[in-house]
Length: 163
Image 1 (cartoon, rainbow, N blue to C red):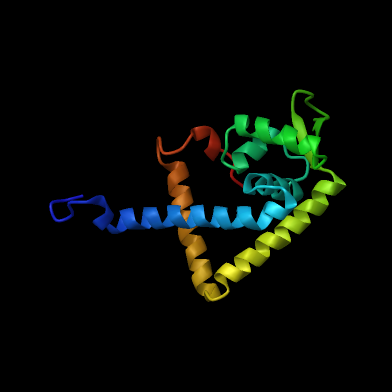
Image 2: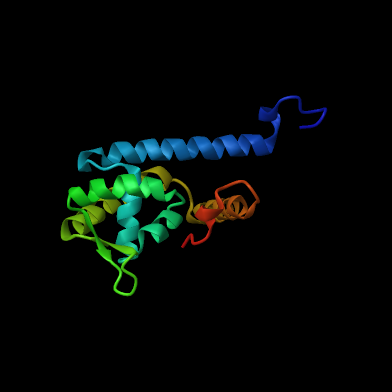
């Protein structure tokens, strides 16, 4: 802020920050509603999609990709394993490392949930020209990179391997 801008909400950067945060919150709410019939929440979908894409990923790698702490993984993975959606297997070379794999049920649920998410994205963004979508994605990617590379803004353990 400077003398001409007495309040932070008058500053374009502040407004951008708030708009990004609100959009993220609304997207999470819409996705949660859309996934409710499958009895999963957005964090479950994040795990399922990553296991679908990166079969055999370690718990630590998954936590880094999702930008969450390992403790979050420790809470969600047992629930999903108990439900029969995934299984944890010891790494062949290092028995201390657990690798994650979708079960057939987990793979089927992932595909169903991804269709729901894709339909939601299409309904939300169908009126936006593709070049604007691309520009928005590039802008958000830059913001993400700045957040991950700026000292002290995020937990350094989360920024190591984002894939």
